Amino acid sequence: RLPNIEGALLADSIATTGGAILGTSTVTTFVESSSGVAAGGRTGLTSIAVAVLFALSLFLAPIFLAIPAFATAPALIVVGFLMVSGLLNIDFNDVTEAVPAFIAAVAMPFAYSISEGISLGVISYVAINLMCGDTRKKTNWLLYLLAILFILKYIFV
Image (cartoon, rainbow, N blue to C red; front, side, top):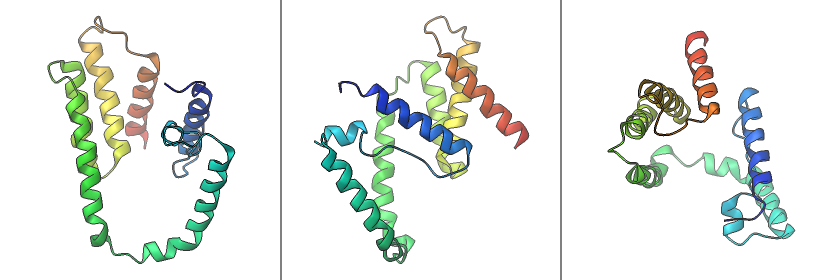
């Protein structure tokens, strides 16, 4: 538990949503993320170090772009295994949890898009909970809103 992290995470989520609406790449807060604090970054010196490293990455980006795609494949496979290991935490005895998680996990590689998998997972989660009566748990209203927006996206875009 990190004290007073709610403000930083709220700002991060608003920036990410605003960036997505404007069509930019993902906008995120690096310095005040919970992982940065957990790693020991609690002072202003951390933000300066991150800024210097980001500035350095501007000049090193062409060098990293010269690395062929097949050279990064082993790292991507390891990341894939780490992502799949998260599926072990899903209660597969609960249909309202298992089916949306399965749909999201299968849709990501087939659509070549994490966001498509997430959107299909949210839509299926809301639909299954509505069909089951949503009596065991209360689905957050934001999920209903997201599901409607995702459905509209698939209809009109």
